[in-house]
Length: 388
Image (cartoon, rainbow, N blue to C red; front, side, top):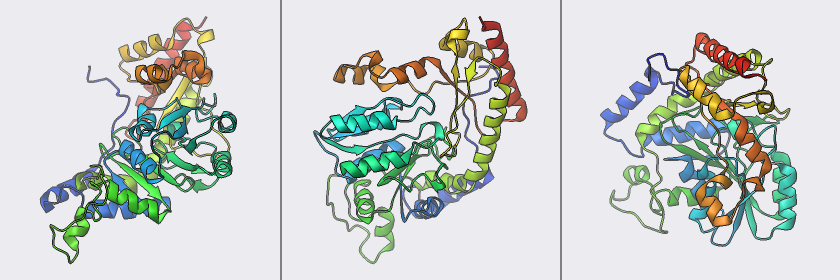
């Protein structure tokens, strides 16, 4: 890879994060401790929820969230096939089955009309797990209305949606539980990590217990209480899902920069949209009820007007020294899900069609205007040459 290669994603870390990590290392408290507690408190205030619980991944958070609301063997959880496998695999962890509903062709979020039809036809659904694709909110009002009428829970996969607002309220304030990701490519990054938010004290207590072996008090509380440091009680067979203070040290300062990061991401998105407007591509649709976190900037190639396919396009971008990605390979095309449930490619035709056309472009705050211009210029050259 050349020195001139522009990667698809890069974390944006400053001296504040570095100094906080060094302070953590010098403190000797590397695992869950005071930095994690501070990060949780800061995050709860940022989102506006009373409970925020840090974990070592969004996947872990989704698992804990579904466990807390009582999902178990034989249950069904509705979600989208147009997501990373983690969204669905956590359902299987609990012995339940994902029930896929196709996506809206503009937003790539779950189609609420098809969701309503599915709920009318299928028994045994216990929860809805919507994914805020790319950083744009699902249409939560009808989702919550359908869930209320069916007496089922809503757990939001907010991995891409920090910060995102739906009708003036931040995502994280709609479902029974919401879960965020701090993976290295996300809008707020700790390398690996996640955060669970909820307004329900019972869910919060269950998650707090289950994220660390089913122990009724976490490490920091044991060390800072009047009880012996070795004293604990196991109340359930839990998991090892706690966040380290090293990760939290990064998160504290990343969160402080979240709105600044968003401003730059939005500026990059605006430059892309303007620079690609006259080409045979669809730039991201912006719905009227949501802001956009711009975790992803996804274009759709109008293949009917081009002599190349999506894979050839990404190969040419890579050859020009620009990284791209594809979000996502629909789950019903993946071997495990296909074989287990007998899916055929056209079972979810919108997800299939979108997948064949989409390309995710680099979008991160440290990109320069020259980087952005280079991406636009390269795309223009490739697509103008490939027009029919």
